[in-house]
Length: 291
Length: 131
Image (cartoon, rainbow over all chains, first blue to last red):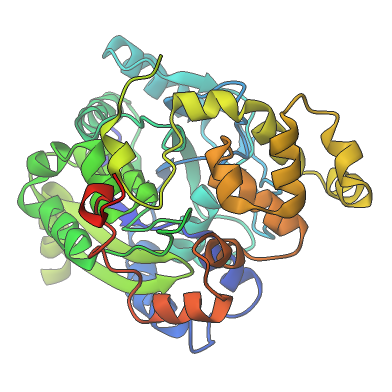
């Protein structure tokens, strides 16, 4: 049986990917961030997931405005890297898992989440920046990836509650796949940031800290945060944090936080990263470590 | 006819909602075209001629040529699509964000290094006496 072992929440700021691509990770500006992600990378190297479900958003790269799917799952064999306007990032092509993705779509639609199926799609920094942060710069990515794109660009994004419940349905879908697979689910974007207009550069550390704490303490309360609160208190683009709630919903009732990083700034963004193990995986892991 | 939206009280912000997306559709389709290197080149060679291919308003075309970012937001441009125009000029996203907030790039970078813009004073138009 396939199982979700952990969730990763992480920002996907494009400047982070650009710093990797341009060899700037050891510049003074970037050192605290990349040093901060080292333990997360080490965790990932040990966890070795077979599949990553990457909840992210496209930034007008795969989807222009002809069609705006609220939730879309990439069912292709592979996903080329988009040229977002400055040339494609020099990172490996992303390999999908069409059979498993098709199962997820089928299960989710019957579970009353009307997912858009995408059979050809390029992926942008929303997906590749988290890959670089957690997997480094290998020749080929060491895991298959199922992209789950969420519309957070055109208001309204799906509500936090809808996202949290979608996460629960993803857990049911993964649990019903009869193959021995370890799955890690990512929720990406955020944290507080605004990248447009005279209010650009907004950061709200209190909001971000409460959000990170809430993921273990009271995710139900996070799921009730209304859209206006994200936009007003944490910045126009902080609405991306609803994607973290999909990740959180997929982990079951109890989770154990095993790592956290918070750093300001990366370009215009407050960066947060968190690793949440499912209670089951956490207990097994502890037992293994003790043995 | 319009409906008053609660987020209209947020200062210094254009929420990209369905009405704004409708106004900005062709503007954003133009910006989307800048994902291709040959289109970036053709645009820079003769901006107005290139823009005439898209049925946007002349106000939108003029704002593109002036790189008048906040006007472009008001006319329905979405920041991620506008970024492609900044990249076409070989500027960073941060450059565009600094211009949008009337700061030099250095001032903007310094503000971010200092922990970013605080919410105090930027919470509400009503509180700022703007509405």
